[in-house]
Length: 305
Image (cartoon, rainbow, N blue to C red):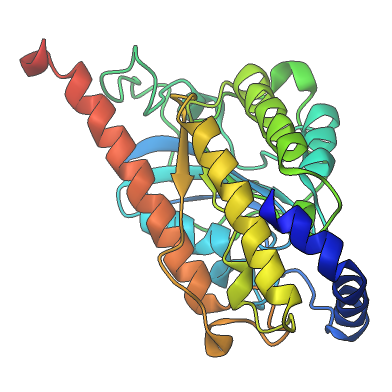
């Protein structure tokens, strides 16, 4: 590929610039707050957000202003969202695969009665639960988070066994930047994406997987030129391969944040998203989720049979 030729020519300079960036870039903490919860009213929707520092909310103070908070607030306008976040700064795709293989996501707020009625289940034509199976709104529940907040319980005591992990309606994936900054080739990275998708479908029965495109690295102010330009080329190649993969996976969809960021759009380190980008990202993902659900509901409607 062209950028490998560039790497051969500019390699020494790019390595020096990369080391300087790593040395000088400020280290920001992950957003504080709960990493699971229940928000909203309506038909139930189970959501899992997974990934790297961007998924973990680096760049903002709390999870309410991070990706999970922005996404769940929009979805909660139509659905009762049981959500969980599994993310860590520095995560590569391989890191996340190992985490999901050995330790399913935290589900403090997931109730079994809500898991019985799935928005994206082909056999579900509505919420058919009887009154006996519905939770008593007047009964106190120490494990139920406040519905007015997107943050939930953050205890590590309620991780499910591998064999009892619940089915997931939607998974939003944020990965690629740390892989891109490593020596991995794009073909190897795509192989890892295939493994991740298979894992999400086989272990969690994920019905809709949103893969976030690698961001436009050539816009990141944290990187000097020509490193910034080179990383932009590499990001484009990663995304080209990702698009080709998603075209073969009916459950998958690409999410592209509709913004070419400038310095004021980024966090203070010039590398992570700001609250503005998280809102755009969450809103874009929510729109894709709602369109998918509406599409499936039209297919299942008796009028279309």
